[in-house]
Image (cartoon, rainbow, N blue to C red):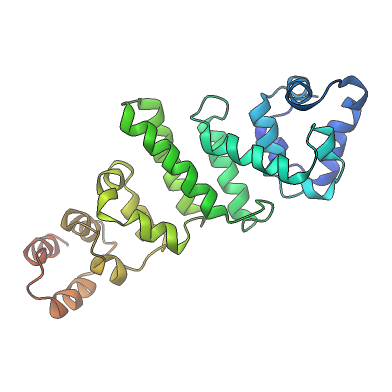
Length: 243
C-alpha cells in the first residue's frame, strides 16, 4: 500500500505494523539496499522513509522495526535520520515534509528525537545558511523562510536558539525571513526584552512598532531608561506614525 510522508510520520503503532508486516517476506538484503526496497514498495524515497518512521513518536513501541529497516540498533537509525534531516536541501525531503517534521516534533514536545530537538533545528539551519551564502537559490530561500516560521510556530525555538538568532550578525537573515517579527508574534520573546536586546537593529524595532508588536508604552519605558540610546529618535518617529 502506497503511503504519503504525512501518513507515515503520523501513523499510530498499529498503523505502522499494518504498513510493514505484509512486506516482510518481500524484502531481501541489508542496510541501504534493504531500505531502498522498502521505500519503493511504500511509494517514498529512502530519506522520507527514514525520517517518516524515525520522527514518528510511536515507532519506539515496535522494537523489531529497527532491524526490519536494516539497522543494528535504534541509535544507528536515529543518527542516520538526524544526518539526513540536517543535510537535505529539498532534494529528498520537500519543504512540506520538513514543516511536517517540525509540526510532529513540536506537538510531541520533542519526544522521540533522542536528544534536544532545538540542537537538531540549529544544526539544520546552519547547514541551510551555509548554502545560502554560496548561491542565490529561490527554492532554497523560499523553503528557508517557511522553515523559520514553522520552527517558531511549533515552539521549537529554545532560549539558546533565540539568543543566537538575535545576534547582530544574523540581522540580514532575520530581515530575509521576517524572523524577528515572528518571534514577537508567537511570544518567543517579550517586547521589553526585544527592544533592549543589543543585537536588534533600530529598523527592526521600528518595524515592530508599526506592526504594533511593540507598544508605545514599551518604547516610552525603554527611552526613559536610555534617553540617549542611538536609536531613540528612530523609535520616536516610529511611535509618531502609529495610529
